[in-house]
Image (tube, rainbow, N blue to C red; front, side, top):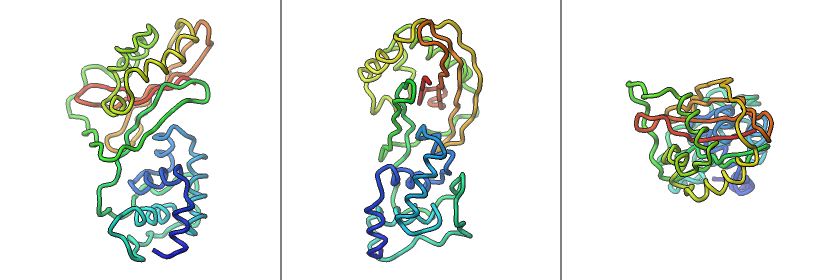
Length: 249
């Protein structure tokens, strides 16, 4: 790698590197935004800053440069291949097609979110070495995703933190203890008061690797907190729907 390229890599922020690592794994700007709980505008700003620092016109090329820098056996001025018709401006979405196969196992993205309020207290963590969740089986889960989401929210409404914690997927529970979940929930949920009404206003399948997730939105009116939008994101794990993220906005 040339000295200017090395300097460009060193100038990248951790947030920019995080975004580029997702791009090299095949995400586009929209799916990166969904995975990180951010707006597409914010992701595109990160990509633009990364391209500027690395003096390239393509987000894929920027991602490849970072991949080269973080791959131990890439000591020389070697590239993993040119963009196939790279654009001068990536626009709203980064390419769907990822870079060439890496020669080492890349960190696996695990969607892990903490319950949030207002502008959001939300965490998405890159967990090296965490196995991917297998694709859903051809057998339909015992209950629909919407019912699983409602059951989870009702446990939270009742202050049953331990029971609601068990509804999370293994990835969340691996890096967030029950105590952490309970402490965050107790700060966020009780001040809203009792639920007056809750209705499902949207359900969307998000094609995020490895197997996609279901994102459900509820319009909920609380006795003290007024009307909020609750978003519960689930994936299939062991034939059941498991929560991987929840926000209150």
